[in-house]
Amino acid sequence: MNPWLLVAAIGIGTVVLRGSFLALLGPGSIPPALQRALRFVPAAVFPAIALPAVLLIDDAYAITFANYRIYAAIVAALVGYRTKSLALTMVAGLTTLWTLTALL
Amino acid sequence: MTSPVPRLTRRQEIRSGLLDTIPLLLAVAPFGFVVGVAAVGAGISTSLAIASSGLIFAGAAQIAAMTLLGAGAAWPTIIGTTLVINARHIMYSATLVQPLGHLSRGWRWFLSYLMVDQLFALTVTRSNDGDDHPQLQWYSAAIGVTLWVVWMSATTAGAVIGASVPASWGLTFAAPLIFIGLTFPALVDRATYAAAAASGFTAIAAATLPFNLGLLIAAVVGITVGVVVDRPT
Picture 1 (spheres, each protein chain N blue to C red):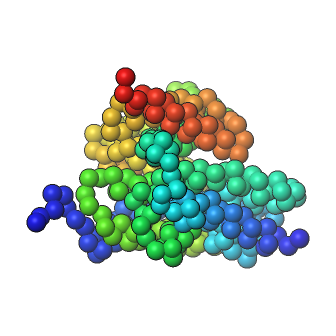
Picture 2 (cartoon, rainbow over the protein chains, first blue to last red; picture 1 turned 120 degrees about the horizontal axis):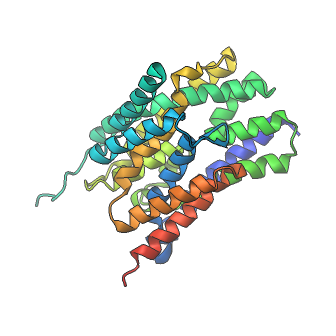
Picture 3 (cartoon, rainbow over the protein chains, first blue to last red; picture 1 turned 90 degrees about the vertical axis):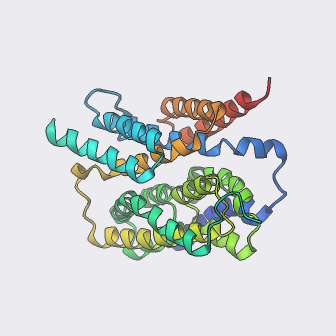
């Protein structure tokens, strides 16, 4: 089979997943118990994306003093907690990482 | 009859969407570039590498698909792997019914196509910010279209140039920073803090599982803990 068809199939599958509730099933398709659970999706998904990306390097744990990303993430988290601003959080994290990399 | 909270216009939504996209580009542009490089590096043709960005429009799934395709994996394996990686979008889709479910079918499919992690994150954060957002779809569309253009351009550049961004720039760190920055607005009470803590610990413990399974497990654990803590005693 043609690899273009494979990529198209993956693309269609991805759109169907993304549209599953929003576009296919629509409003009223979500039972109240699920509705209560969905309130926790952001809080349960965002840290789960962020933390492994900070603590692992090339798919291996790097929970050491030499992993500057950890310090930068802590600074970013403090700024994020105080300001709730995405832009300031990113500037704080990247600046910390660059400073540590340049100095140490 | 005045509204108790600010009621934002279409123009304000588009403006905010464009402004909120700027910090995301620090992560999306290098990531797209790397995906383009990785696809060509895996032996995929330049044209298919570029087209896959438009057809799939999901970074992690694209890298997995290109890598497996280049390695000659079986078709069901490739399709199954990418769909497992993207399974989190089912949760996103269900979550977005509340703020966006009233839209026309065309709008809902359009936004579904564009609904990458960052767009979901910004859309749901804005829908919960306390203001009235009758034109929220324009906010999401402004972000989604901008990300799409940048993603296509970046993968094209990566596929054509085939070089890589110097690792010393540390720009791969921009992606986790996005999600650190978006976590805090989502923490509004004891139950959401508990959900985030449980999910974070689980994600670290399960981080080496294949196919992003650690993320799915952590999400389920976090949501469960949130619901349990939330239950009135």
